[in-house]
Structures are given as structure tokens and as C-alpha cells.
Image (tube, rainbow, N blue to C red; front, top):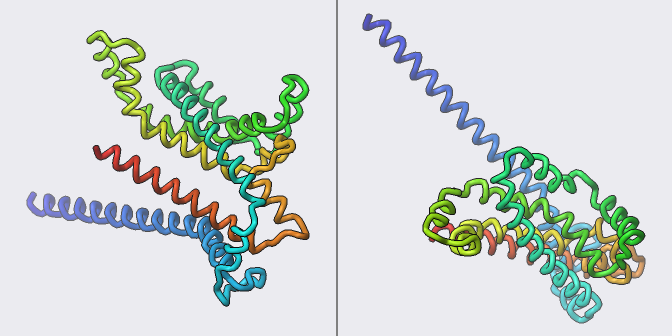
Length: 282
């Protein structure tokens, strides 16, 4: 009897050790995969930043590091108007994403029958190429809605592209929301607006900020959807695309401009994440 019990304990310990080892191997593979994917994404960005301070960036290899390309970039102001326009559109899209995602994110978790259908409709633009959306907006809304190509057509297509990501960011928070808090507030006599402002808004704020961040960054760097609906306007991605495809363009300056855009986008993302972590701790 004692021998059998000892054998069972030994087999149990061996099985536990094999499970721990397999978990460690799976964790190591997950970490390696994540690092490889991160390197694939950010290595070209870092390389572009190195080339932007190279004396001969078109040669493909850095050397004779200098800041003269950045000085030349700031010496001209042709890119400033597209940048201001892109920031203006991105701010509008961010506000619309926060408002729309807050409304949809509060309602969808409470629905049972049509929640999946509505969520699929909201996320459908993710499966449609950006150029197709831009072309459809150009054809449909210009003919049937009389929409003039320009600022609001750009806001519309940028919103269509950014809203699914904004909604997903808010749904992560809203799905964990305890509706019993609202029921308790209603029993204490709080009205709908008071319940939203005092209870829902603080708890949903991380998701709301995430929605706005997605809207701003995706709109700031949006190119395919903008090609057909920009009209006479030129956003910063359109300006960079036009300059890169022009024979008379100065590619080193484009390297600098893209590097600055990447640095600003990364700084906004990191700042938003740190602010959300600090808020969640408090």
C-alpha cells in the first residue's frame, strides 16, 4: 500500500514538472514571437531615423552623421499647412470616436439578441480595404448626398476607418462594467445623467481616452482613404506621398518628416498609456 502511494506521488510530481516545463516553453515562445514581431515593425522605423541624420541617406547605409536635413526641413514651410490640417482633422475624428464609442460601448453590453449583429456591423469596415471605402464615399455621397470633397469628406472616411478600433478599445472596459452600481444609484434616486457622470464616466474613462487616442493617431497617418476624397486639400500623409512620388522631391527631407511623425505618434501613445496606468492605480 505504501509503495503504491509513493509511486502515485512520484507520477503526480513528474506530471506537474512536465506541465511546468511546457508552460515555461510556451511562455518563452510567446515572448520570442512578440519580440520578433515588434522588431519587424519598429526596425524599419529606427533605420529610417538613422538615415535621416546620415550625410548620404540615399546610399542606403548611414555615415557622416549630420543635422543638415532637419535644418533644411525647418527652413521650408510647405509641410506646415498639411500638418496643421491633419492635426485639425485628427482632433475632430478623436472627439467623434470618443462620443460614438461611448454611446455604442454603453449600449452593446446590455443587449442580448442583436449585440453580435450590431458589433459585426460596427467592425465591418476592418474587412474593407481603405481605398475601396474612399472610392465608395467619393462616388456615393458626392452623387446622392451632394457632399463636396474636402474637410468633411476626409473626416467621414477617417472616422469610418478609426471607429472600429475606438469601439474595441472601449468595449474592453465596458464589458467588465458592473451594472449593479447603476442599479444601486437608481435606488438612491440618481437620474440617468447623474448615474452616467458620477459612476459610468469615471469607470469608462480609460476606454474613452483609448478611443480618442486611436481616432487621433489613425486619422493623423491615414492615406488610402484620403486619396479619393481630399479634393483640393492635402493632408500630411498626402503631402508626403506626393513628394515621394515626385521627381523633384527631396527624399532626405521626407525621411526627416516621417521620423518626426513616428516619434510624435509613439510619444502620444506612451503618454496615454502611462496616464491610464496612473489613473487605474488611483
